[in-house]
Length: 357
Length: 224
Image 1 (spheres, helix red, strand yellow):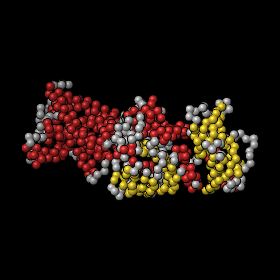
Image 2 (cartoon, chains in turn yellow, orange):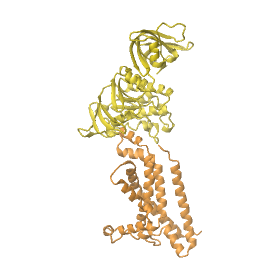
Image 3 (cartoon, one colour):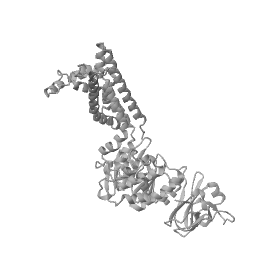
Image 4 (cartoon, helix red, strand yellow):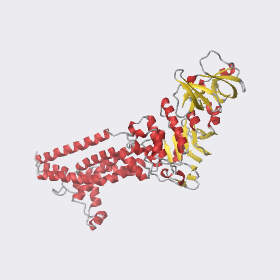
C-alpha cells in the first residue's frame, strides 16, 4: 500500500511518505508520535492537508486528483484502542453491523461468521449485552466486527494497550490466528516491542510524526537508536519453537527452536498445536565469560558476540548461540567483563524467565 | 373540586394541541439539534441564539411577532389566507404559539444528549460501511433517545403552560382557543374561583408528572 500524507497537528506535523506490502505491518513508536492520527487518516476519519493513500492499487485519497472516498466506501476495518463497541446493541448485532456492506472486487474474502467466532472463541458471548463484557472479550468482539465487514485492510490501534499484562498474553495468540486464518492485510499500531516481534512482518518506526526507520522487525528494532531511545519498554527475544515433552513433577517443558537449540521453559500441558512462541526479556539473560557451575539456571549456551550498541550507559548485545539473543547490560558490566565484538560468552537463562505467548 | 364538562373540554383541548405541537416540532428539533451538536456551519451561533430567543424574551413579545407574521395584513398571512389557511384566533394559532415557545427547550435538551454520544462510535459505524443516515438512525438517535424523550416531555409541559404568546396570536375564546392557562386566568378574572382551582390542580399534577419523568430519564441516562 501507498501512504503519503501531510497532516498538521498541535505540536508537530505528521509527514509520511512510504509504500509497503506485508501481511502485518506494524507502526511502532512512543505515545504521541502520530500513530492513531495516521490510522484515522487511512480510514478517512481525518482531514489530510496533502498526499495520497492507496490500498491494493485503489486510491482512497489523493489531493492531486481530488479523490477523497468517505469512510463507508473505503472497505477498511478499524479496531480503535477503546474497542468502540455500540453499547446499545447486543454482541451479535455489533458483530453483524458491517456484515451487509457491499464488497468491492478487492474485498471478496470468504469469511463465515461461524469461522470468525470460532477463531476468536466468542460464540458463547453472542446474546450478551456488550456492557457485560470483560476488556479482553470486548476487544475480540471488536475484532470480529471489523473482520466480518470483509475489509481489504484491517487497522488495529493498540488493541492490547488497555488490557493488563496477563490478559495481553492471552489475547496476543488470537491476533496471530487472525493474521494466519483470514488473509486480511493488517496495520498494527503499538508501542510494545513484543507485539511487533510476535505479529509483524514489517515495521515502520514513527517519531514525532516522522518515519525514522522501516524494515523487517528484528533487524530494524535492533539498532541502538530505535531500541534504547524508547523509554520504559522491555525488549523481548521472541522465538518460534516446537514442543517436545513436558514434566509436571519437574515443572519444566523441553522445546526446540528452528535452529535446533533445545530450551527448558516452565511447565505447560502438551498443547494441541506443538508450534509455540516463547519470549524472554533482554534484561533477564545473564552473560558469563566462563562456563558457570553450581547454578540453578537450566539454560546455559555458548555463543559469540555479534553486535554491541551503546547509548546512555546501556548496552545492547547481539549474541549468536544457535539463535540470536539480544541481551541488555549496563556499560559497567561490559567494561568489567571486557566484552567486545567476537568475544565468546555463555548465556544463562532461568527456566522461569521464559514466557509462552 | 368540581370537574365540570367545561373543565374536561378545556383539559382535553390543551393536551391535544400540546401533543400536536410537540409532535410537530420533534423532527425539526432533532435535526436542528444534530446540526448544532455535530456540524460546523456559517452563522451557526446566530441561528442558535435565534432558536433560544423565545426562552428569554417576554412571551407576549414573541406573540406579537407571531401576530405580525401570521396576521392577515402581513404578506405571509395574506398568502396563507388566500390558500384557505387562517392561523390567528383559532386552534392553529394556539398550536403555532405553543410550538414556537417550546421549541428552544426541545432543541437544548436534544442537543446536549447528542453531544454526549461518543463521536468515535459514529466514526467506527461509518468505517463498517454505514451511510450517514444509517449512522444517525441506528447509532446516534438510539444512544440519545433518553435525552430526546426528556426534551419532548419538557416541551410538552412548556406548551401546556403557554399563555402570553397564545393570548396574542389566538385570543382567549372559550370553546375555541381557550387552553388551561387561559381558562384559569379567565375564571379568576370573572370570580369563578372553584373552577380556577380545579384547573390549577390539573396543571400542577401534569407539570409534576412531566418534569419528574423527564428528570428521571436524564438521571438514568448512561454516558457513552
